[in-house]
Image (cartoon, rainbow, N blue to C red; front, side):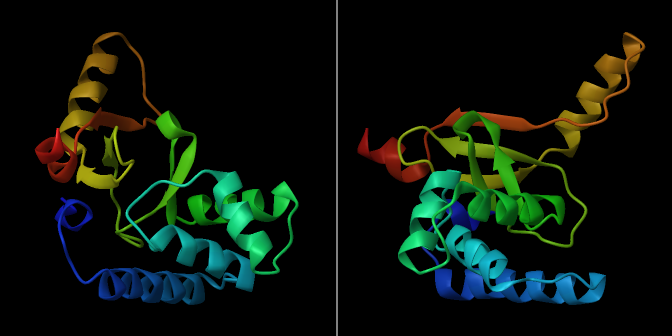
Length: 158
């Protein structure tokens, strides 16, 4: 579980650790973490929130990286393909992977009020889904588990 998303913590340390792991992974795989890709990952790491591609593009544009949608989409696609970011389909947005380099299939816990996104282990959910599919003769190749609710802060405020 990634309890940091919903708790006060040293986010600079948190995001710095993830960025360092991402750089190490890219180096190990011989991948180029270009300035645009790196900056997009940094933007995603600024908060535990999901951001839309146009939000990312707007930030890139103000920082001189270009203002054409492919700039953001290509960088986001690279980060997702390399396991450094996740696509949050419910929000049509992206969030930094908080466990890069680790084999995991997270369930995304999305606060409907503030859009904070936390990764939770989804192995038990996936096992149940695989078993239900197998009973029907179906083989799951890919799944995305997203749960919408209220984070502790928003729940207290309600």
